[in-house]
Image: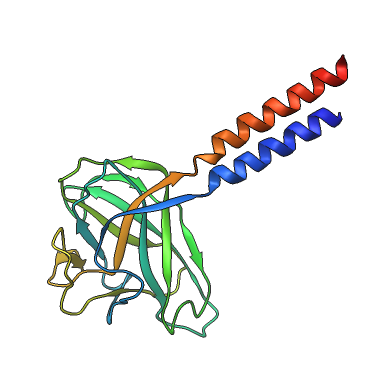
Length: 202
């Protein structure tokens, strides 16, 4: 029984370690140091999104700057992101895990939110892809921050009401690289436990 508990503890520690990783940014219109100055509303302005041209072979996350448009009414929102091919309304390649945000979320700024894909979505480097934001039924009116006159990003453009514009959303996308120590921790911990059990058995 004691061995089983020790082994379970190591597995849980390793699983927690696997959940951590390094965010590797591929495409972005800016960074957190330079927030956008305008906004779009996900529901009335939809489809709202962005085209981009990845240089990596997968998309593991998309980071956006969101906020509550109707704050102090007791309602929040749950939002997910669709990764699409061909157009802003094209085939869905993958959908992110939904993110729930409370009433009054990031009204004063700084609503940087990561939308994670459970499995990194394979993409072809140099090909244009699209993502759009979806507020789930029952959500409050939710905003996403964008640049009024565009940004320095040249690999795509922002979309409002399904139409391309001259502006970009504030966005960053890329992959999450697992910490190398996770595998080492699992193997080392398992080895020590089995060695300990064998010694005690002898």
